Image 1 (cartoon, rainbow, N blue to C red):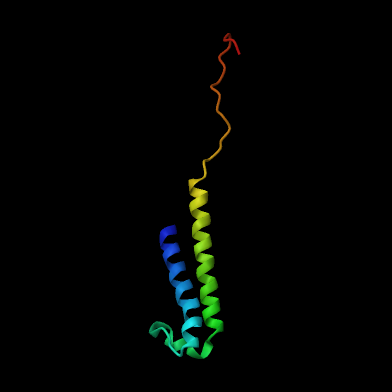
Image 2 (spheres, rainbow, N blue to C red):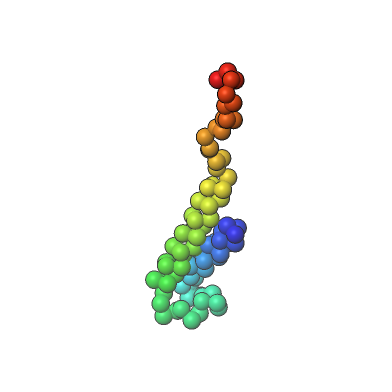
Amino acid sequence: MSSIMMRIGVLCAVLGFGTLVLEQFDYEFRILSWATDMQPVFGIVLGVAGLALIGGSVALNRAKSAPQQQAPVQPPQQPGQPG
């Protein structure tokens, strides 16, 4: 799931920050042509949301790969055995 989250985050970041660059040259992404009136705020928000998704994906991967530390389990002592 985190790889999907990473891909969506990268897509949002590229589209969001890309609209800021393309706007300077009077171009736009066709998929975001409906948001022309909302630029540059929409591009910034979409880019930051993409970065948040990327950060969340990285955090989830680190949490999954971190070794789980558990207290060592000792077998129960039987009466009459040395402890």
